Length: 443
Ligand code: 5AD
Ligand code: SF4
Image (cartoon, rainbow, N blue to C red):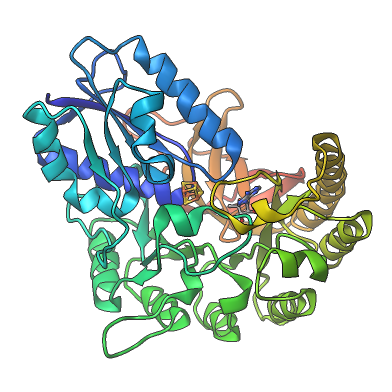
């Protein structure tokens, strides 16, 4: 068993976990292949944040089943693995390995068990103080890299599976984070993203006891790092010192993803979010008053149990007030183990869809307005790739806005030349709700 295939769903944490799994397997002499057919070990890194994501897992596992019996070994990793545990063996008997994210340090041992013919191997303990700190992380991009700074979540939002699938919070030492960041800079990475389910409740476990703002600031001072991002922030733990750090330190990107979930105090209270609308708006106020133009993005859940029309209208009013730069909207989905299951007043699916659409339409015009402000201005982009369909280079601004552009000197990449990984000055000529377009300025 020396070839493997891996497929990944879910958030950036999951994407990064897969990079760690790939790195570990490569180090153990495995070879990565692009298709299930060519692989001896098939891994599936799963997400269970909403019911749909979880359904997808079992559907995909059914598809894999066709390949079973050909000597292949199937493994389910990630949040569905942690949540469903050994039940996965019942629903998908061709699966031999079920392991949650807190068990990846044990992956080499689990692989040995599989190689020696063990049919059922599990790694489901959440009882670990380890943060998966491997020297063998494989990176999907040569320019941008993820760094995990905190694992798990100690909040208890009424709708959320994460505390169950990723366990309690464990922060990594600042020394270990900075060591990884420095070595990435030395390898030529210029952009890093600090990751955690609740990144700003970071607390250095070593005696220095740094908080998140300090760690962010120090990371932004590493030579060679031009952009430092972070996600995801919880409003309750979001202190003004983070904004002060962004204002002080140009390497810190002027973008904050701050999920609000709802604009109604009653709903926030039932969601057990630990802040109210006014607490949230005071954080928005800090950002609006900052020296730098900070882009604010958010997540919203529509149709949480008991959400009335008045509650929903509060959310519409809030998004008009904040004027978010981007928004992810989700219809509430019942999740196992969560306390919201106890609410009885569930909202009908059609009503969730109606609220979803209304919110989406309103946000679309806000984004159009927000993005139109950039037309005629110069923006700095980090180039990520080239779109052959539109003949445009693809880049992102510090605010994380996609900015697609043409370049007179290098209209398309060639075998010898690319703009990927470069930072360029681009004149914005057009705006749409989800992206900007422009022309690079001759240097
Ligand atoms: N139903 C719908 N959306 C959810 N989210 C988390 N749990 C649920 C759920 N049960 C959303 C939240 C969170 C984002 C990652 O997913 O908005 O911020
Ligand atoms: Fe999905 Fe949440 Fe797990 Fe990320 S942590 S993969 S969003 S369930």
